Image 1 (cartoon, helix red, strand yellow):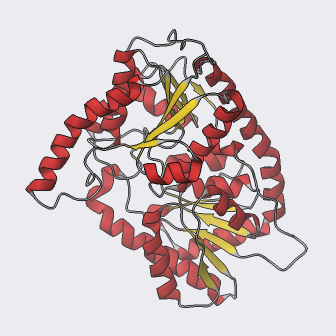
Image 2 (cartoon, helix red, strand yellow):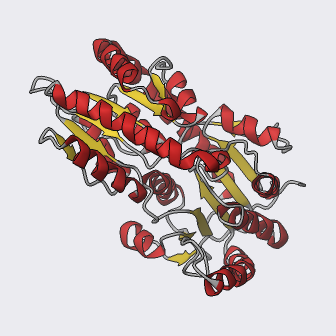
Image 3 (spheres, one colour):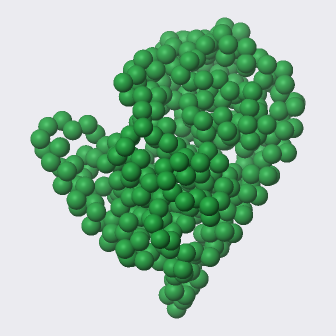
Length: 406
């Protein structure tokens, strides 16, 4: 009897805890629904994925300098050759599997800077190889957004068309893919996969007040705002620094959180600028770590999307410093649409006013989150039920019947 072979694709193990959280959510489901499956990953940080999650993993890119800026002819040639080699490597990897799954993440988004020959190209290769080799590729609960970059748009459109299965974490994502010319009539919207992860117990409300958790980000605008990146980065850092300094001046303990390794210089800059014993930074390596910090907090002010998801999931009142429409939509879906502040136009005074309004409404917000969280967890449960027919049972041939015509 053969074991089903399941490949997982994405930027896992690369320092972004939101991406890794999506991976963990799917692994938990696979281990329950297909305990005999052979699961491995093609990802950004294979050593980290194997060490943390116990599955074999291979490096996404042949050229090891893929993520650094080309410093000379050698790097340029290496990247060029790497793109050709990757086409064959990815096809060989896809061929070894009965199904390939892309679990969650903003894999179809351009809300942050990216190059067309990075993830858009890699995802296109995976989906094209799946189509040619008759290995279904499933985009499960993914995020998507429109972009002004024609190469990114084209690669994203064809990757989505060539996938055997598509579902989204919100309606904005499905609308974005439809606007790119993909037929989404059979595509469903569920919720972010991480809403099924275990939730730590809440903090002791009878004890002393908890800290204010402030999730910061190395924010420099979207892929279409590269020409304004430095200006947006300075404005964001200045606004968040002023906000944290004001909290500390009021005697509030502040806990700085990140969601990606690239955010750490932002915390260091704020710590240096504020220079207060009330302001500290947490070391968080997973969404579980983030949720533990947020569960004992009084309030959360968060920028990164999955920082926000963690706060809402543990039931802590949150204010979104929103850098993309997905954050606004998530807050609206949770009944907290008025508690948003634009990351591109941070006004520390206005942010403080919104923060105080959130704190005054804290009890009602907690009740709302208690009601909404089970709804989202149920949506993800239904997402996994819908995915199960694509997962071959032990000894069974994969079901390729759902491959669609592009």
